[in-house]
Structure formats: C-alpha cells, structure tokens
Length: 416
Image (tube, rainbow, N blue to C red; front, side, top):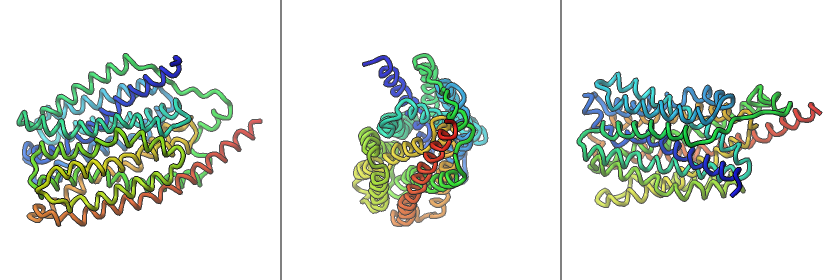
C-alpha cells in the first residue's frame, strides 16, 4: 500500500471512530426517558424527550458556521475539539443535580457534536473524489456502531447500576479520552485552494440563485426523512415500554437492532449508489417505509420479533445517508463543501430534531390508551408517509448538480 493510500485509510478509520461517538450520544438517552422523568420529577415524558430535542437543536443550529470553519481551518482539529466538547457535555449531564442544569449540559453536548459532519464529510469527499458514496458508507459503519452501542449500553448499564446517570457519565469520559487520542494519532488534511478560478468560486456557495433555491428545497424535503428517523427512535422506545411492558434494558436491546445491519448496508448501498444514486435512494426509502408501517402490528408476546424487524428497518433506512450525502458533496465544488453540508444539515436537522419532543407529547396525549398498540398505528403510518414524501428532494438535488457544473464551467472559461 502506498503512503498516500495508507494515509487515506488511516484517516478514514479514525473519522469512522469519531462518527461512532457522535451518534452514541444522540441515541444513548432514548431508553432512559422514563428513569430521567422520575429522577427530575418531571410532569410529563415530553419533558424528558425534550432533552434529546434540545441536544439535537444545539447540534444542527451551528452547522453552517461549522461548515464555514471546515472550509477555512484544520478539519482534524475541529473534529477532535468537537468530540471533546460533546463528551464534556455528557459528563455535565450525568452530574446535573437539576433539570435546568441538565438542559444546559445537553446544549453543550449538542454544540460539540455540530463540529463533526461538516468537517468530516468535506474531508472524506476531498480524499475520495471517486467512489465518494463508498467512502462515506465506510465511515457510516462507525455511525451504525455508535447507534447500536448507544441504546444497548445505556439500557444495560442503567439496569445494572440502578441509575441512568452511570452510562451517561461513562460514555462522556470515554468520548473525551478518544478526542485526545484522535488529535494525537490522526494526520491533518487541510483544505488548499490554488487555482485562480477556484479562489473565485470559493467566494460563494452556489453559482446561481436557481441552484441555491433547489438546494434549499432538497434540504427541506430530506428533513422529512430526518424527522422520521429521529421520531422512530423515540416513538418505538415509548411504544415498547407503554404498549408491551418492555423494561429499560429490553428497550435498549430492541432499539439497538436498528443499527446491526448498517455494518453491511451502509458501505454496500453507498458503493452501489455511485452508479445510480436516484434508484437506490428510492429503493431504501420504500423498503424502510413498509417496515415502519408493519412494526406496530407485531405481536407483543414475541418480543424478539421487534429486534429483527427494527434491524430490517435500519438496514434500509440508514443506507439513505451515505447515498444522499455523496450526492450533496458531488453537487457542489470542493472549496465550499463544508459550508454546503453545514447548510444542508442545519436546514434538514432542525425539523428532525423536533421529532423527539413532538413524539413525546403525542404519546402523552394518548393517556391510558398508550397501553394499547393500536393507539400507535396512525403515528407510525405518518412517519412512513413522510419518508416517502422526502424523495421529492432527489430531482431538486440533481438540478443543483447540473447548474453548479454549468456555473463552474463558465468560471473556468472566463479565466482563460
């Protein structure tokens, strides 16, 4: 293996590890909603789910600013610093004596998490200009591992210790230590712009107002996907515990099933999508929507079925991310990819992050009916429909790519 290939492989692996921690923190609290509600004496479970909503709002709101930084500063340093702040936020949450301090801690954690995706996605797209979907699928394995470990570890450790704070504290400390190791072991890959036409192109994100409008439209469409994905975690946690009497530990195990198959599906579909992004996106969205609609109809006495059905859901749903993210990266110029992706996840993530809070209040509104599986049918059906509707973002994203390539060609011609 050449030194350049070795550098790329090492960077890809280390970024994948950071990706795991970033998503561990996003899902670790999901099986802990009811213990958190009890610990802080909260009036409703919606107040507990709001912790995750607030963390995700703090994660997505700074995304564009983080994208600007990713285009101008060391992406390695941004990634290491972000994970350190994320871990410190979880340590603060574990030690928080009151609900207001818990809210402040998740804001810190979410802000730390916001460093990751703009810097990491732009870095990997620059390292792998060919087979970008495959490379993003490989770092997606880290995300799948994090999503898997988060709920299963949090549920198991909370059950063993009798305290929801134990797994939160341990995950926070581990993340902070990993940030130090990442900064020590990883190589920096700065963004370098040399050609005159590239310097001119870097002054703005999009080459035309039409491309900007289509980009925003695509981001808004795919935020329906993000709402579904976030909502599925919180809704299924509350569904299993209320309608089927699952314990915190059983819920964590069931939710972890969403991410088991991603070790295969993310690199597989990411690779396949490099030769047909549109059709593979439609396939994974449709299959995931069918599984979402099926899930609440499963018999509760066969609890193991939920793990396997959630595994099928995650196999298809999570594969959407490297496919679409590769499309976003290839639609814009390398010099603006950090900003473009920051804008993308800021728009798409805001609605998605609200889903935890909204789902909590929807389930709270069921009252005593929350113990009946049929009360959840309509909510799962809405999530399935939103996932299908998000596909309208595909032609919008393709329109961005066509216009940006024409704009780039025009800039090059003008410099000759």
